[in-house]
Image 1: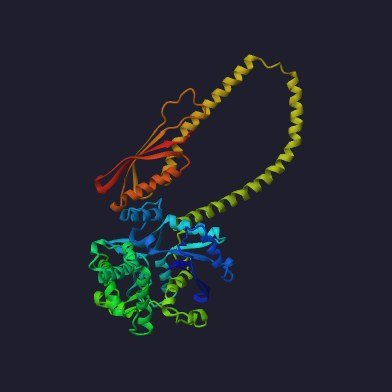
Image 2: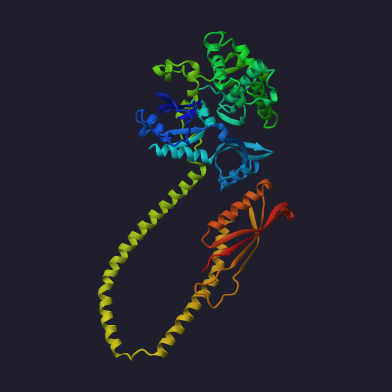
Length: 563
């Protein structure tokens, strides 16, 4: 379920194997000025969700607009370990996003060749963290747990993934016109190769209508550079009037031909919104050109259009003329067999059905193929580690249980013998002379000598432990040049040993583009080791290194934990 145009749209789908069936659809108007931030939104959400049969047992997904996230494609070198870090730093180099304000995730798309090297084609994406948290809290306050939060782009992709819309093997695009933005996604088959958000949407077209009305009615009283939505309302031209013209363009153009609305027909309204449409067309053309000439893809053979104005023939003809693509298709899925039994759908006009298209795609979401900002690749990796550690813990507990049983049996056998020895020792103790100062001093000296001996052995064994740990942590593409340990000078006050510093000097080999990624990955591993404390890259520089060619030479300072 999701919010669009002041309504909360919800669709319940059930699946049987690879087949989906729609069983319930609803669109509820929200109260004026109500948003997910409103204090009464959870109550409204609870009211809507409670009308859906079996909602408590359903997996609930919602989505945020494409404008609140970003999607792009990267080619990542093939690495045996730490693939997440390789993807993260590759994406970070292209888009310097702030990991504190966004949720980061990725999906592997397949193998590819980039500049003669084998790479992994990966789709990476981010979403505004505050938007994700806001929705999560709103559903929680309403008494429902969210299964997933995704982007609108991926809701549309679900339709192709589940064969509800024809994808084929060639290139095509999806254009979705939203309230304050539009987004275009270019596909090859069912795979997204380029996604771009454009800051021209329905609001821009409404502004164009209002501005044109001002020019027509008040040309002698107001100049173009004095126009704004605010003073347009003062002049008696509001957005409601402009919205009626947009609705006429969407509805009467489809149903009633060129019937007039307030003295206008579709062609005259098209002329009013043409400045905004031209900006949108130029951005679409630029996006397609980038896909062709920069990324090496082909131009889309056809374009699906969804959202506002998707039903308007004159708008479609406008795009056909400006883009040179003749095949535009309205993204209407409601003539499929899955909906023929729905009286709700049959009662809706096409312009009322279109907002539900993305809701249907959203309802098909599954973690297996739909990006989920509540369950990212990093979450999955951590879950695997937790499961593996849990299994190890279970095995250890089982071993301890068997050992404790064996020890318990032996201890019971030893108990009687110990009691007898205690009685014997008690008799011997009575015959010993009383403890004096000299005896205590001798015992204290013996304890101190033994402590120093243990400390010395610890010092001697620690370097071996450090070398063993370093060997386990160093990946194949990093070669050590020098390893030095400085324990410093122990002080008399130290009673638990003292820390030292480990100096690691080495070189990073392989793909020069990923040098920093590999080095950061090593630092991350060192920090997680129980033997090491604070870890800092003292210096790093790219230089020629004999037969190895250009490498990244580095020095890392690592504080040792107290022994």
